[in-house]
Length: 166
Image 1 (cartoon, rainbow, N blue to C red):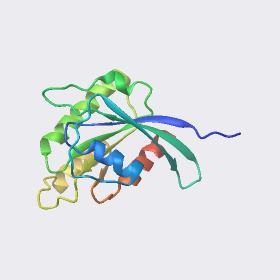
Image 2: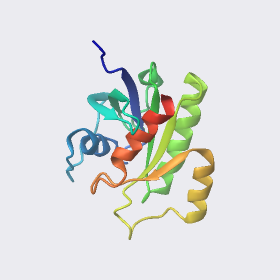
Image 3: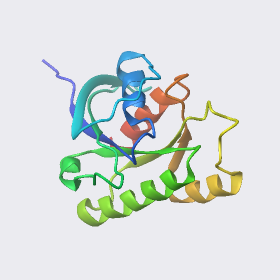
Image 4: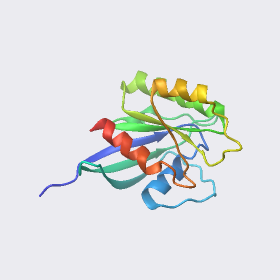
């Protein structure tokens, strides 16, 4: 009997960038405007099927956001096949925090597959990421503009990460 392989992935970023909303959109197809702070980690599962027919059960770890009150525990990433690095396109400082997190993760765990998500692209009037900044970020990692609210590129983000580590 062939079982579907399981792979752990993590969502990391500063507080209030939409990590939990991205997971809820991906796993359950839901979105809520209600803000829920993640304390520690929340774990969900969802099977992903790639275009070639390969199936993978993702164990999705939604990690607490890093802010001045709470630092991300690097031990949560142990055993992870890769991670989604999440920033808020309406808050430039969240991109800098995400890139700093990436450096710290690589220092502790070595290079891991990652996709950088600039979330909240639906808030176009508040969007602050310029094309030049986007080009700089694309030179460092695969970057997707996402919206947990509309679902824009959310499934694609998880699929791209899965393709990177398989």
